[in-house]
Length: 164
Image (tube, rainbow, N blue to C red; front, side, top):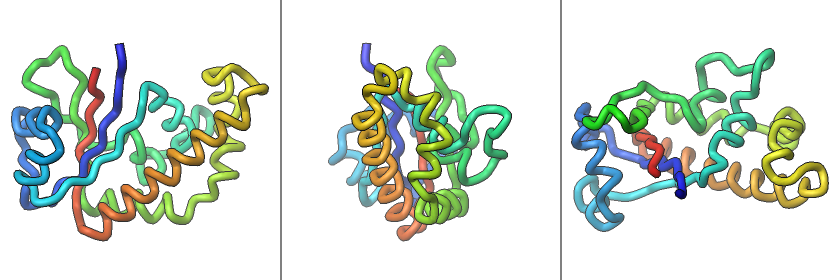
């Protein structure tokens, strides 16, 4: 079973505070989404999305407080889908997206990696897999930075959802 964590940019005027509307946003194909909201930008994280949360928000006792670092992956206001057995949607306002983009743009990946390295490496096979793990995390960091920066430049919000 594959799990993917989807992040989709949505112009604030198009965003609906409706769980049914949000569920359709993730069920529709790219062309339908583009037609409905005027453009389409999406980032998809594979089942390792929790590892990226370590990269940004850290773990106790160094966990980031609620704010840009904590909002990169799993942050946002939760909204339950119609089927309560599914994970909630997470919504970031355009202002929150701008703060996340500023954080990511100024973040030092090497510093983030050093802080999360010990938590991430076991998931990739240990210290021998460090070059691969670091490369995957660095590429994901670049992709997330580009996604949030472009989304902030358009003044858009972000909706996130875990799809199985």
